[in-house]
Image (cartoon, rainbow, N blue to C red; front, top):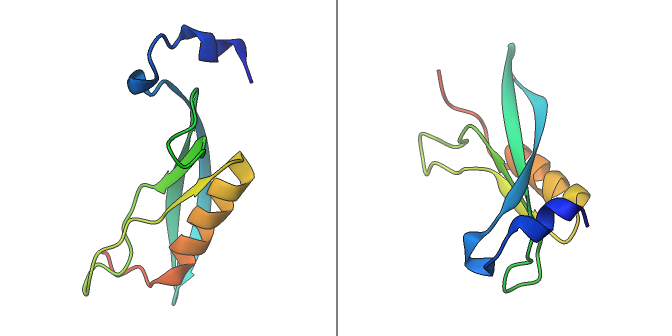
Length: 94
């Protein structure tokens, strides 16, 4: 745990350090770049999770749009869950 976590005075502030990642997904002959932001919270949520990862694009847009995301007790767990979620549905954007 870094010293940055001590800047939070109230858990309701949800202070978070951001980590950025990028992954390419192939859809036919196209390559779609997804940018993933992982938030590392100073205080774990009610499920004892400290990391939340979320992609910048939705998938499955034509049926029921879905924003890939993942929670975890570690950065790796949240990031891996988000990557799996990106591959769960097709990208149907432009």
